[in-house]
Image (tube, rainbow, N blue to C red; front, side, top):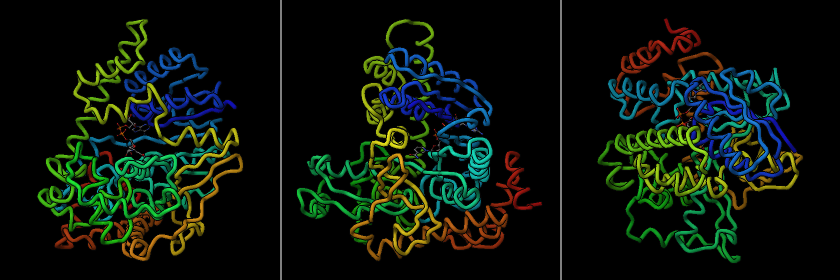
Length: 477
Ligand code: NAD
């Protein structure tokens, strides 16, 4: 069945190419129209050129349109994917720098249980506001469409949308649960035969079930902690000392980005991070690890631009592994990243956006990990909080699995509860237009020493020129 898909922030080239790669292989969605929307015309054009070329070389039946108008991407669409980062990485660094000036190492948005460096819940008001705006436009222009939230913060963002615009169908996706397969491969287990479940919040998921051949396979994970370990990239942390420290403290294995989201005890400074996340980077969220990521993103964008140039100049096939790999080497894209970003030339990306659309439209059931309102799936978590859980999707919608065995008490009360409280404060600040909730988060922050520190850091961030909407929303003079 053909559908209309709007991709907002489509200039996020790597993401868009992964989606296009999956679409090309999705015969069920043949004939679909994809509207690429971004405010950056240069990035948008490169993606459009490449998407068209990809389709031509693979002889797929898909139509692309580009636009800088949000409503164009939403009107008459069946699915609207949001992957935009309002203000870009540049804004994140600006706000982080102000935070550091006032004594908040890695910025005010780095918080216990949320250290991920582009997961801003406090200072990127424009990002949260854009989420709500998109949902409102969907409600008006395409009320039956699904909003697919890929942009971060997925936890705060999807919970906010479900409360602010409850009539819109929204689902959040992340690929963090792939950490389960990484563990299985390391042990030498056949992923196909694995019986697994994860549950929690986005970037806060825990392995509640890990069975193989009818037996509990958790002891095989525990054995891995004695092995010699060195990270290959800053993001290589699934089997780091930190992951096992969390396993030993909470009694369950943290999966994917959850490992990044420990407490200040493990993030106090670069030296502490090195100990838990390994040398030389100290994990993805240290000053070094994040710099590595930003440089990698830049080189990846370069590869995309070069490919787009080639597409215009040459009639030769460009979507083949050797061609892309050659360029990746030229621009120093590390091998692991090359695999993650460009393997889509040969196989499905592992992202869930297109499988979700296929399952809903064809009715062929698909097991996915989704971010949706809890509604009783995780006992002890309120219904109106969005949880990340496994579910079967078919033409009737999303059917959450029963979480069995349940999350243990340590994970629920000592990790998920405090993480949820931070989300509540950030979401209430937005909904009630009350900056006091943000102050409250900062007053509970171990880096805070005085009232003045909190007021000054918020005031300086709010007075950045792009934050006029934030000042107005919170009535900050
Ligand atoms: P990026 O800055 O490279 O790309 C984002 C794109 O958004 C840019 O092309 C930019 O021009 C565009 N944009 C900015 N403001 C816009 C607006 N108002 N309307 C439309 N487009 C706009 O960022 P990135 O590193 O690709 O990350 C994008 C988002 O995806 C981030 O929020 C990031 O945290 C998130 N992310 C999510 C996952 C996941 O699995 N859910 C994985 C990686 C990254």
